[in-house]
Length: 480
Image (cartoon, rainbow, N blue to C red; front, top):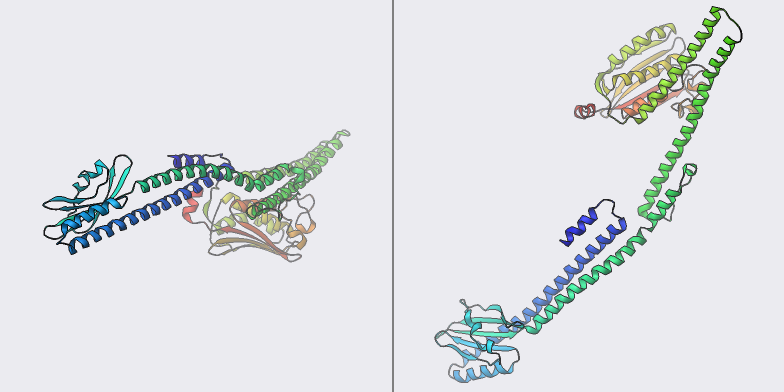
C-alpha cells in the first residue's frame, strides 16, 4: 500500500526532481535496511532454534543410552531422570511407555507444564520430531520427542524453555521496526539535502540560461566547472546558441537584403511615375512608361512568390504528397519547355535521366526548372546542359550539369543564401530574384535529401540533388 502510494507520487507529472530523488533514495534505503534486518532476524532465530535443537537431541540420546545400559536398575534410572530434570534449569524430561504411559517426569513447578498436554502428540516414526509449545501467554517451550523400539516401546520427551529467546526476538522485531521508521525519516532528510546539493549546478545552469537575451547570443556557458552529466548539456546548449545566433544574423541580413532588393524596383517605379507626371506626354510615351512599370511589377511578383514559397517550405512539417515518378518522363516535359530557349541560345539540352524517384512531381519540376533556368542564363553559345541520374541502394542522385561560366570557390558556400549576389555566383544585375538556389535547397530538404554543387570557374557547374530511396510501405504511410 505504502509502496504503491510512493510510486504514484514518483510518476506524477511536474514533480520536483529533488523530491523524486529524495523519495527514490528513501524508498531504496528503507527496503535495503528492511531486507538486511529481516535477514539478520532470520539468521538469529535459526541459530537460537538450532542451539535448542542440539540440546534436545543430546538429552534424548543420553537418556536413551542410559535406559538401554541400565535395564536391571530401571527404577534407580527413573529417579536419576527426575533429579536431572529438576536440577537443569529450563530443561524438562518425560519418559513414556506404550502400556504404562508416563513413567518418569521432572517437576517443573508449573501446573500447566505438569499436565499431559505436551504428550498429546506422539511420534509415529523412529526419527526425532520437534514442535513449538506455548503455555500461558508468555511461556514458550521447544519440545522434541523420539520413539525407540523395544519391549515395550518407549517415547522420550524433552522440552526446553525458550521464553527468553522469544522475548529477545520480539524485542529485536520491535527494534527493527523502530529502526526502519527512524531510517526512513533520516533518509528523507539526508536524501533531500543531497539532492538539493547535487542539483545546484542545474539551478546555476538554468539561471545562466534565464539571463540570456537576444543581444547576448554570443555568450557561451560550457566550461570545465560543470559536472560531466551537465557538460554535454551545456555544450549542446552552446551549439543551440550558435545556431540561434546564426539564424538571427541570417534574418538580419535577409531583412537588409529584402529592403535592398525592394528598394530598386520601387525607386524605378517611382522614377517612372514622376517622369510620366512631370509633363504631358504622348500615348506611346505613357505606354512605354507603363510597360517598364509592368516589368518591375513582374519582378516584384516573382520575388514575393518566391519568399512565400520559402516561408511555407520552412514551416510545413506535414508529409508531402509523394509518388513514384519516372525521372525521364518528368525531365522530358521540362526539357520540352526550355528547348526553344536553348535553341535560341545555341545550347544543347540533353535528357539522359533514367530510373524512378519518390517525390512530389510539382516540387521536383520546380527545383530542376530553377537549375535549368540558371544553366541557360550562364551557358554560352555552343555549350551544353545535361540531365542524368546515378542510383545506389540508399539514394537517387539527379544531376544537372552545364558547361557555363562556373562559380568561384569563394562563392560556392554562399550561393544558397537568399539574395546573395556575385558576378561569379550566377546573378546579373536586374535578372532573377536571387532566390532560385535557395528554393531548390528548400525543396530538396523537404524530401529529406541534400544538394551540393561542383563548379570550376570558366568550365561549368554540376548540381547534384540526392533523394533518399523510400520503400513502398513507408511511402504509403507518408502519403496518408
